[in-house]
Image (cartoon, rainbow, N blue to C red; front, side, top):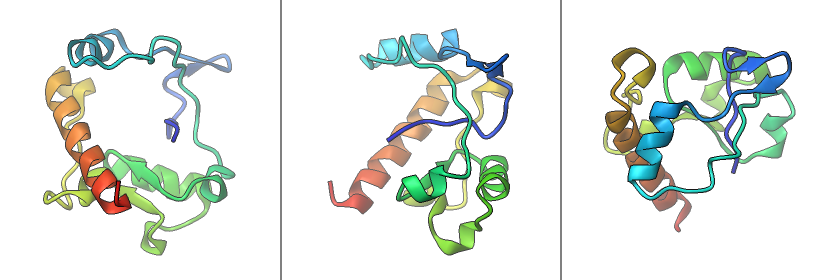
Length: 121
């Protein structure tokens, strides 16, 4: 499992940014560790073959993933995270605009629980 950006916004001069400080604070509050050395990287075409699923937080991610991999979400490998929950069709709340990192965390946690259920874990 890896995280990859669908844009270059978090990658400067070939170096990825660390986890955004307000997001890091929410992760710490929830006891999530191990992200301190995380650096952004960009999705690439080879990721489509390398991973079983590519999951986006919103429709813009899905469009970018399709463009970057040359594959369509209709093929079933590119999915919207909340489609794995009872909130299919909804997008993860974007904290970049709302500054509400807690709601984004809850959306992502719900989506991850749905993913684990779908995988039978």
